[in-house]
Amino acid sequence: MAKHDNITAELPHDVYADVEAAVSAGEFGSLGEAVSRVMTEWATVRRIEAEAFTARARAMITESRSDPRPPVDAEDVFDRLEAKYTAMIEAEGRRE
Image (tube, rainbow, N blue to C red; front, top):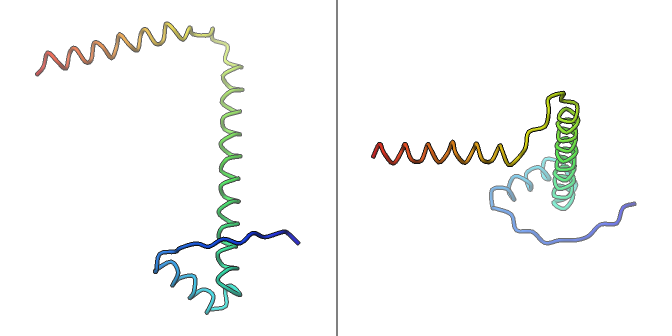
């Protein structure tokens, strides 16, 4: 059996009432069981989302590495962006 650690948590009154109602309805054996199950599900969803994010990032890297176009120099990109946004700011200043 897995080891458990105890915590003390403060819940908003409405959340506590919902959890207590779920226990009273027999959905859980105790308040502790309800909170434990919810937290375990939250941790599982969080882990799944992190794994999905990692998979998407890896797919994007793989796609990028297999792109046949030549690489673009980052310095050139930043120079173009800086020139573009400087021109936009100057144009805004002339309109005022």
